[in-house]
Length: 243
Image (cartoon, rainbow, N blue to C red; front, side):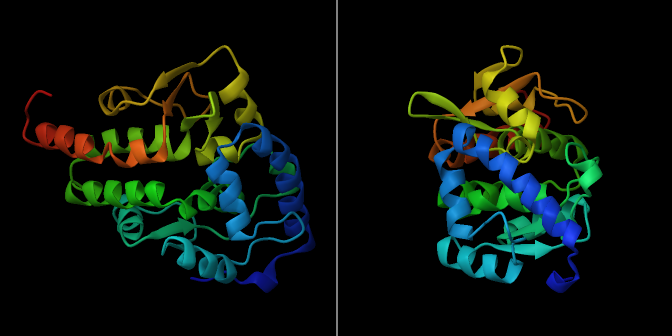
């Protein structure tokens, strides 16, 4: 599949501009510096839906990653295979004006605006690639994939990070959500705890409302350096051993 850029309608461009403009106000306040820098590297702008070919040229120079076009949600095995090959799966369709605040299935704004900027960060990319490799080794073990899915959810999708004595957002599910961007940082309701592999594995997530708990990393390097612990715990689980 490919992005047929010429097929985007006037409404598509307006949706992107509307989402981009209102979300950037929150991104500049609540997002990690690496996310903001990544958006600049990728060349994102309000008036123009990202052209995947152009973004891929920029990503290739930064980290060797690229966007891989898919029709929507795909099965777990090809998903992790693409990640392990440094290909982030993204759809090309965009929500309608009537769907600005909620979608059941991720669209291009979530996939691209939310995920792609951090693919310019080498530590984050290395974490993603190696995590995918672990998943592929255990792809037929539903329980292990469930645990790795929880970790992916609480880092790649809904992760927070300590920066300059403040908590900032880097997870794509937060960054692409107008409401959850502020909620994840400002609300007194959810717990914000230091990222830990075992704790993350033991925490269930929600897909139908804001999270009750967020995990906070100290740096993207720390996230990458947690890979050996992930491998160790998964090995024990695969052998039926206690952690």
